[in-house]
Image (cartoon, rainbow, N blue to C red):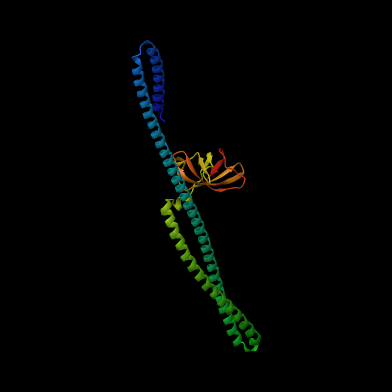
Length: 285
């Protein structure tokens, strides 16, 4: 009920009480006031009935407004949960892409080593052939030298064939990984279009030091506010490592950036290490 409605009801009750007292005194003095008193009582009753009806209407509207508010709150919570899931998917895809890049670099290094080994084996083969030719020319001493050279040549050719097969296998694996990398990059591009977070912004974080201003754990996985923002170079998607002295506590990913304030979600937390107001925060430890 609104304050004006309460005041009107109280005022009517006070006026009614005053009127009853006045009517009682007037009735003893003059019987003619009895009819006027009855009329006023009836009018008061009518007014009270109207006020009660208005009060019921206001209460009904209040219930409708509360139900609408609850519906909007549920929709907001669902949107926040969906956003968090999308962010988690993006982080997973970035991690997978980094792993594929590392594996591809290892394969490239292995291929370079195999190519070098192949060249060395080919040189060994060439030297073995030369040794065999020289041994054939020196008929007197050719027997033992020829057998040794032929055995060495066979070993070299076997190693060369094995290396060639390994190169072919690695080339096949490289092609497969490049296709998978292209697929992951396509998925990553879709996630970037969906969330608006640029991978370049996340990967090129400068060193920024800050302090935790507030922690809210009522919304999982938890929200953290820090005392630096756009003025200090903070961008959406940056991650801050949280610590207290030498105790590492976890990691926060920035979602909202203001001139001198930022806030984000807890993406990693060390067991039994609660993040608190006053803890240190830095993009690089």
